Every structure is written in structure tokens, then in C-alpha cells.
Length: 233
Image (cartoon, rainbow, N blue to C red; front, side, top):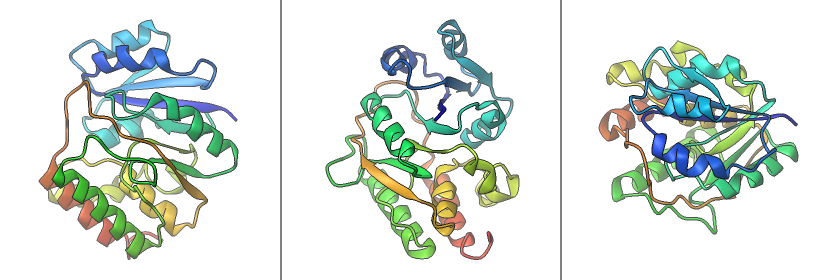
């Protein structure tokens, strides 16, 4: 099984320096850092470590995925944030579950035995609400449908039409650019793919800038969840 670590960054050089040296050697056939036009030298640092680096042309987290996905060489991919929220020790756990044949493995902050140390009242409620809505409307069995920290078959990105601009139409109503994870969770559930959670604590963010747009992202995600009940096959 070939495995790519996909690392989207925006001004995350401190996190890259702190966490990337701990990546288990030999676990990944490729480490791909996708830089959102950082001003702190993140891309240069990643190149110096020998990682594959792509500097995205359009701003926004989903554009990092859409633009750089063709560069992925692994049959499977794990998406990872180097801000301190993702525990490096759980990379091997996710990889082992993928090797067992799962289409997607989610490092869940809310599975039994795990907790988020980074949630506030609003983000904790929002993550619970969207996970519940995705389960109710789309037949999911998730404990955490929103997290970036997950592994899945690389081919799912195109199979689920995550590369298509029309898939993110709700964001235009709220003048924002949203992430791919909620839509990935929705469409994977609708396809009845083989999915599992593994418990993974979410530590407090240690490095980088928080990019969360609570009102606009929340509104766009809610519209997306409802739209997907009729929009996508």
C-alpha cells in the first residue's frame, strides 16, 4: 500500500518545524506540503526537508486540495494539519486501518476514549450539530464528520466529485471558501463506503493562525448538508 501525507499549510512554519520531524520514517512514500501562499517561509522550509511542495494559485483550503490532488502518488492519502491539533502518533493507527481495507478512516475527536482540548462552546456544538445532521440526512454513522485528520483512498476525491466547482456552490451565497471534509463525509456515507473511526485526542492548537469563519462557514456547511439530500446522485 503506497501512502501520501497531504499537509495543507498557511503560515505554519513553526508547526512544520515542531511536528514534521516526528513523522514515522518509512510510513509514507510521499509527503506533499501544499502552501497557501505563506509569508513565513513555510514552502522553502518544506523544500529543504525534501518534501514535495506545491504553492496553490487560488486562495482557500479546498483549492489546496483541488489544485494539488493530481500530484499525489499514493494509493491512499492521510490529510494532516501541522498546527498541533493532529497527534503524530496516530498516523500509524490510521495507516493500519487503511491497510485492513477501509475506504476511509477518521481520527475522531469524539469517539469513545478521545476528546478535543481545542473546542470552544461554539465549535464543539457546531461539530456535533453537523455530524448529527450528516448522520440523520445521509445515513452516516460518524462520531466526527468534520475533522481534517483522516485517511482515505486517493481515488475517492474524483469518484465523489470533490474536484468539481459545482459541488461547493453553497459557499458563494456566503462569500467564503469552505473545506472538503463535510462533503467528503456526506458523499462517502451516501455511497455506503467502508468507513471507521479511531479515537484520537485533539490537543490545543500550538502554532499557526486560526482561519475559522464561524458564521459564514457554518451557514455554507448547513446549506451544503441540506442541498446534498437532493443534489448529488
